[in-house]
Image (cartoon, rainbow, N blue to C red; front, top):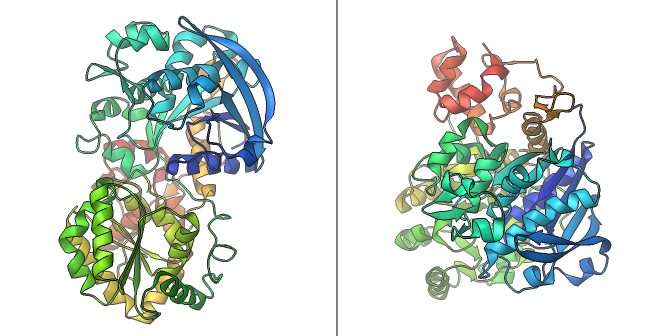
Amino acid sequence: MEKKLKILFVSPEVSPFMKTGGLADVVGSLPRELKKKGHDVRVVMPEYKNIPDHFVKDFEHVTDFRMNMVWRNKYVGVNKLKHKGVPTYFIDNKYYFFRESLYENADKEEQFAFFSRAVLEMINKIDFKPDIIHCNDWQTGPLSLMLKDNYQVYDFYRDIRTVFSIHNLAYQGKFDPRIVSDVLGVSNYHLTSGNIRHDNMVNYMKTGIMYSDIINTVSETYAEEIKTEYYGEGLDYILRMRDNDLYGVVNGIDYDEFDPATDDCIYHNYDKNNIEKKYENKVKLQKELGLEQNKEIPVISIISRLVEQKGIDLFPAVFEEMLAQNLQFVILGTGQNRYEDFFRYINSRYPDKVSANITYDTELAQKIYASSDMFLMPSRFEPCGLGQLISMRYGTIPIVKETGGLKDTVIPYNEYEDKGYGFSFSNYNAHDMLYTLKRALSFYHKKEVWNKLVKRVMQQDFSWKKAAKEYEELYSKILVDKKDNKVTKIKTKNENHKININEADMEELTKISGIGPAYAERIINYRINKGKFTSKTELKNINGIGKSKFNKIKNKITT
């Protein structure tokens, strides 16, 4: 991208300062990659009570001011810390953020309305005018509404554009309608029109969707899924309405943090040219966890929240059958009591075959990723998923349910064409999961095949570099031409270059924004089975490429 942008990421959590889930990892990594591309990227989050002291002691106080929030007049402090080259601002207000809980406070609608307004006030005070404000999840939903309703009458704010990223549609922020006049301080029209109302409640997620210039979510398949009733969490109708502005960009992972060649947490370092060391890691893990020490026994890992969304409810029906195979299970995570108790019970019955670690330990997690042979992730739905990306980085073969980002990132192994590097099942069914595990085990015992899969999966690139390029393209769709204040697309390099879908190989196809490895694989298989595409519209015959996705890519391809 030729034009260098000013970008402000707004997030309720950012790694390494505060983390409850994958959102923090995304906002902790993506800005760094965009900064490497020459953009002026900054981040802002609340200054929570439990941010580690070793960060807080290095905060620089930037400014403070009083801010009106309807009838309230509140203190806003702004502190800053530059971490790995990216400036992060912390919004300080002890009343709202010096608490034990992040998201479960009785006045959370007020907390995050305050946060959104404070960010908009802050950028003017510190004289940083972003081209793009990139909001994340329901906690930042009010910002785009406030920008349009309260601030864009002023010159400073007029041409700022917003992106709203949905990391998990299930969490929406639903509140009493009275907050429109008492907390948000915007026109009642936004409520009566239905733009911010859902089920007779103010919905912060819907607010972000309705008032942001572009919406994206964290995988292409999830962007399609959430427009359906099954995955849409009640908001599918509004996502269909904004279909032309809805995009999917698969997350990446930090390849410096997750690198088996340099990782200090694992027993032995290794890379794709030295995978024997991976099996030495396995024996060390078996010893540490009290399992039989035998590098020939396949180790299957589960690193997850133990909740139904992650597919944990599938296990009770088939776990005994799984354990009838010659294998070992290593489980790490916490969650619902019944699933924690289930794995503790299984551990007690099969202590030589199961190690259930009902906790979360980042160092142990790294050891498990490096030491296990397969990583099982049968999520009911999964916006993107980071576990499968980390496992692949460490040469651990993923076994997944085909949904969301799992479908986009894991290409099933096809032994007849010798393509793919993982295993997957499409129906949310315990016995389908069992069959897929058995299929993976059958190849595990063919060492030449298995070692080839391990090396192949380690060659995949799920770093932030590709995702950052796609975000640049996303931002370019809504940039403002300062001369006439109209939204215009800024030309990017190779903008006029179209990919020939009859000639492109896997690598070329994945360069098309909107076509990840899974779709590229399907395009190539279609050519093999059906012959050359006679027209671009024939792409719609491929599973998953419907009218919406086709419209987004049709100008980037040719036959």
